[in-house]
Image (cartoon, rainbow, N blue to C red):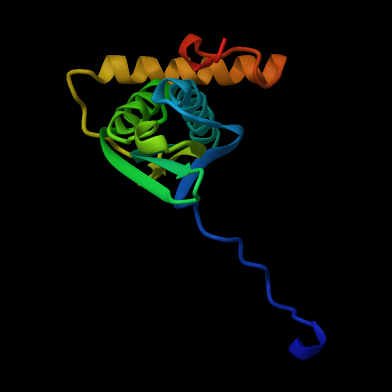
Length: 165
């Protein structure tokens, strides 16, 4: 029966995601970290939005850079506490970018991306900290930004530092 494509077993849905990310190949190569920073912040916000929609938090941020010669570089950083706040993810991504050579020795960047890993449920118990109010405020802001985009469309609102203009 299986050889003829007949299978009466119930379909089992795949497991939970291991990582969530967003990357972009540029039309023209970027030659400085200043050109990449707004892109990384925008990607961090998109990744954070996807985390919140999946009701997840991440504890690891990964930055991926691909050069014009197709050599690839990744850097990762663990967060102090799991988060779905785009500002926290963006800050970690730009810190990682600071440690990557972009324009030295004529290296041009063709692609950059931000991903998160170490995912856990947003409802999972967490260790409280002195900065709990600030952390919760950042995630609530993200929820509000998601609601604005749901109502007015993608790109209706963006962080000031995440724009090329």
